[in-house]
Image (cartoon, rainbow, N blue to C red):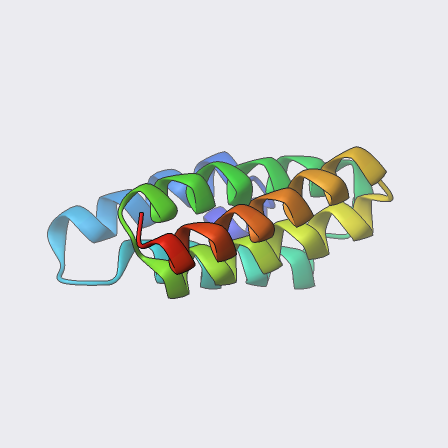
Length: 108
């Protein structure tokens, strides 16, 4: 239902509730849900919110040292930013991916 609404915030709430009740990979589940939004959203005005949500979650995943989750969320953010036609968001997604690479190399 949250996906059908096309609202990243509702999707996030739904994923977090599921993650609290079941043993699931929270960041992977968020990435999969946001990827689905990237595929189903028809209103381009929604893509900036998808990108922003993915960037926030990617930062959280990096802090948790969940490198695969962070990488997937960075990719989601970049795709949403590109679909939005927002160069600033695209740059932020590229910066997040670069930060992820640096953190992986340094182990922090």
